[in-house]
Image 1: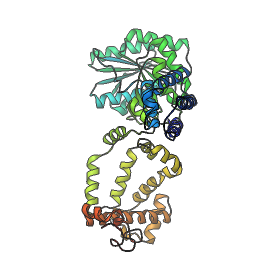
Image 2: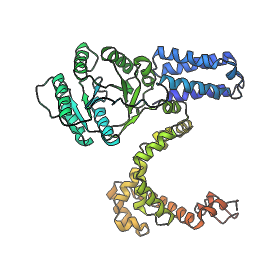
Image 3: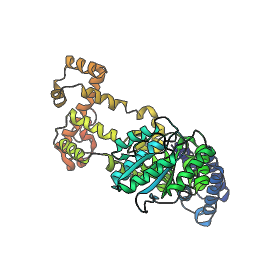
Image 4: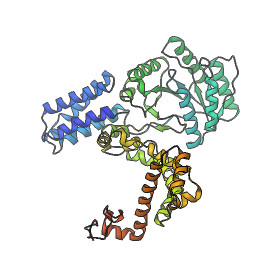
Length: 466
């Protein structure tokens, strides 16, 4: 999402790093580039002005101008200013400190992902915080909106308020809170109607619901892809009903990212959650310092570790590791490994969370981040018999034709998979034979097949290290 802004800011810092000691003119020139980069990224003009002024005040000083590494010093100042613009370091949690059932009001324009976000939030509160959640759709405008929320509630494993035709949004909200009180719910999520654009009828409806329910949280759901329109929407809702927090959806898109940087300054309300993807578990806490780090190419290792901890099957990982160490790795294990990788999301997204990988991604280009080959491998393995998966050596010409036909691939694709798997198996057997000490002594080339650095130590194609 922030790739264009990230690339331009990296260029500014690279230019400063080459200059040695910085003059005030160098800082001013760099800030002009930063200002243009932020405007191009769709950041609101008042936010850009405030941001650049803050950085100038901190950068044009004795400490930075005589710094040994001025480029890094300015990058640190810009990083701190980015964190401030995004709402300050640390997650701002949802405020659920109220007498149950705690009303949470979801507001926003139609198409922003409000209903899906309501389902995601219900799942998050039910699974992570062990809350008993009731979902209620107050959207009587959009056809089947109430049925959509009922289906999402079923998928999330929470309860949805039964639909009664003819009730007004205010009546539905009152009924939801009444049911919440009588049946012991912790949280009632109220999904309000949206409009294609802001109008007084929408605002009046939301005001009436707010006055009846007195929500502990009024969460504005905005689509990050809409850029400045998202900022205008946030401003209008905040002035009309008051917003306590923002949920940015489609953070996995290719928008310029300006809306996220502008939101806190425009509304005064922090971004509390972000959505990326359609799956119900694709809702995350917003960490300003991590987002700032990703914008500046510093990565988000903590986020990647958390993502792995939440999504990967650790028992399966340990089982695979043990089989690899024992030299018993087969095609079933390889398929399991691919599924684990797929759980983490796109390879491009994973690379974006690693420090300094922005330039690597740029150099590689999208074609080298294509993971369709993994899907192809899963299809090929799925077309094999159990015996073939456990002993690939038995797969000869006629079997290859059958597997290719069954997986919608070619015999060449099957051959490539078998060759790649054979290389992996060889490397694992050698690792098992060498052990860690042997590997340290002979180097990584000892694992490679012959002709690729796998000869005897010091011999032809072998490692020069003993």
